[in-house]
Amino acid sequence: REMDINLLIKDSVSCLDQCEALLNMISEEAYVEQTQVSATVGTHMRHLLDQFQCLFSGQPYRTADYDARKRDKSIETNMAAARLVSVTAKRRLSDLWRHEKKGVGQRVELGVELSVRESVHHASPQISGSSNLQRELMGMITHGTHHLALMVMIGKQLRYELHKDFGKAPSTIVHERG
Image (cartoon, rainbow, N blue to C red; front, side):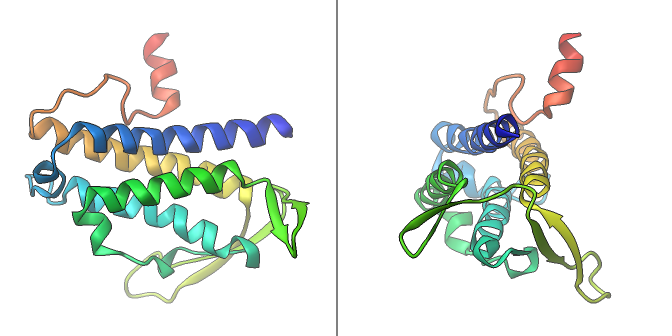
């Protein structure tokens, strides 16, 4: 159980580290440049970071409402804003297992039930379901990896060289290494 916590936090931080590595590599112009992929690096970065923010903002209430994303345009267009959100998310991950309540540390259990809400189709009402923090962090990692892969595609179109494992799913990396 303790290993699960450490791995999930480590791998979530790794996802955010990749975001920061990309932010440190590309130019401000490339961050907002529209390519054939139809979105910008900034758009995908903002979306990835929004997901983490939704999870963290609902955590004290044992909820995660992914439709309540801020969709802050400054994160899409300003790399410094994106860096700040990423650093803040990494700090929140580092403190995740300690939830402060009235100044007294209280352990947060990864298996505690969360109510998760999200729209799954534009013409349907929002749905709710049960999950837990462990499952949601796993989802953050896979969802983040997906958006990192899209950012890699955009980066390549803009002629940036990225590490061959950047934005790849862990299972793909293991499979490719045989």
